[in-house]
Length: 232
Image 1 (cartoon, one colour):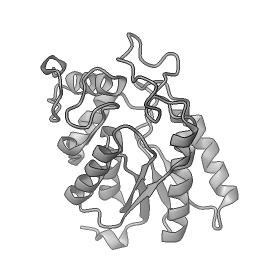
Image 2 (tube, rainbow, N blue to C red):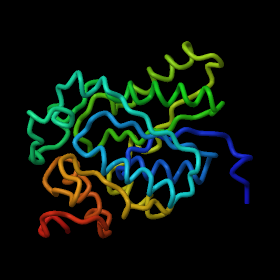
Image 3 (cartoon, rainbow, N blue to C red):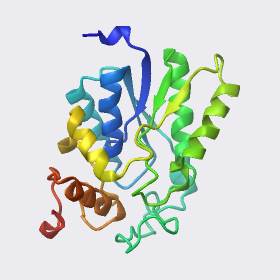
Image 4 (spheres, one colour):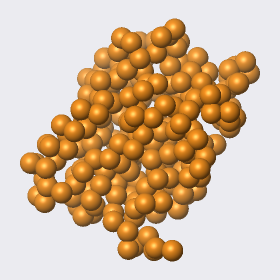
């Protein structure tokens, strides 16, 4: 078996959610990974930080960095960062109009930190669990966004060789669940809910997408939900 030290280095953005955790499991399989978590004043930041730490422990990721971004909360404009805005329940059609849970240009902030750290670590890859299909329709989860960002990295970094990988971007959520089960992603430690930190609400966009994904994959979602009827 190839040792971790002999593999190329990668920085994986790990929010603690389902998709980023599958990315982290892939990073452990394919790279010498370092995990990055960015808090930005979101409603569930404490629970997401806990998930990050536990997931790293389970996957054996030793090199970790936790960073705080105060700009996104100060800017506001999202129900995830502004307590005056209510987190809506899942819409009938997910993926249409960009919802109020969109954090303006958030992934650019995250990628900038990840690329900076990758330069210092001399890592070749930054992994992010962006998903276009079966998503809430966020504009910074589209393939063309990452193609453009890779060009920014090529022209704006010292070596110009770091690349962003989005291994899940064209997958359905149910496919991501199946892949995660194959690679040993610790779904029981993940947190996806937009509004609660004790038990997932089961009714926000993120919970609805997650529940549907597990149901379509024929698997049981292992995290607790506030509404017993939410679990398939």
